Amino acid sequence: MQMQLIRIWNPINYLERNLMIDVILDTLLDVVKLLPFLFLTYLAMEYLEHKTGDKAELLVKKAGRFGPVIGGVLGIVPQCGFSAAASNLYAGRVISLGTLMAIYLSTSDEMLPILISEQVSFWLIVKILLAKAVIGMVAGLIIDFLLRKKGLEQHEHIHDICEHEHCHCEKGIFRSALSHTAQITFFILIITFALNLILYFVGEDALANLILSKPVVGPLLASLVGLIPNCAGSVVITQLYLEKVIGIGSAMAGLLTGSGVGLLVLFRVNHNRKENLRILGLLYGIGVLAGIVIELFL
Image (cartoon, rainbow, N blue to C red; front, top):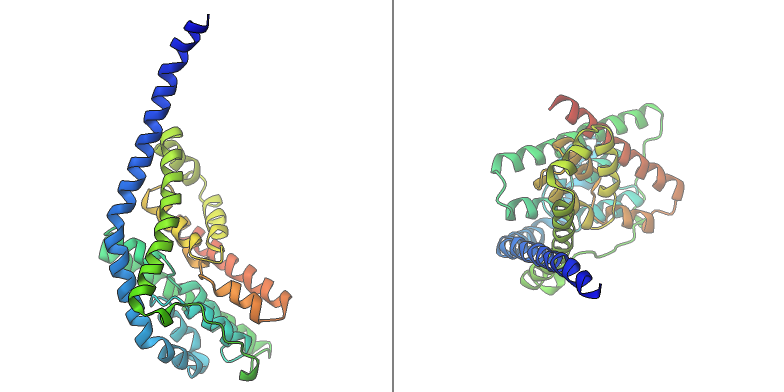
């Protein structure tokens, strides 16, 4: 009896071990191919931020009613601390709510280096960035217009701003790029491994149909993932999109709400908790609405 059980279970265990080895090898191979592209992209980003970071903040401060337009454009520039800086500026009422929202919605966070490292079409990257910028600008301008109409326009009180450093520029651009690459590689490794496991056991078609067949549910869930206040959210959304698990509408919903550490900083420096929750809800609502519209018409 015992020998029969051994004969039955050994082939199953052998297949399971081989399957797990295949999943691990596929995951490592996928991630290793990305490393040089990720590092070079982060090196370029760190150089860009080191040269333009302070100028970008100054430009947003002086933009006035055109703040959402400037914020939407500058938000797509890959700068690790721009959404955090925007939260600080909003807490001091140096920038408007519309400008803050435009920056949050257009912030590319970790999406851009992943798309570049995966050698995605240049024009697709441009379209995604432009869509985020335009949605951010339009939403920001509408928000500021409604606030002015209600007489709720904000005024500066710079002395309330708390400065928080969230980048690693003091380490030098090379070490900072290396640090970013290591952190994102870890996230991608975990997410790719989880995705490969799911795809092996569930099947890519079954998983895609499960999400893509529900056009409203996809953006609702993706926007929640995007709200994760670090790079994990945008990494997850981008990887799911590249694996064709979610469509462009759901991907845009998650990428629009993905504002990096901006929300985390906002809750720390802006002491009005109810206002912070309203901003969180507004960001989520815009992301979901935009995602649903994109899924319906594209």
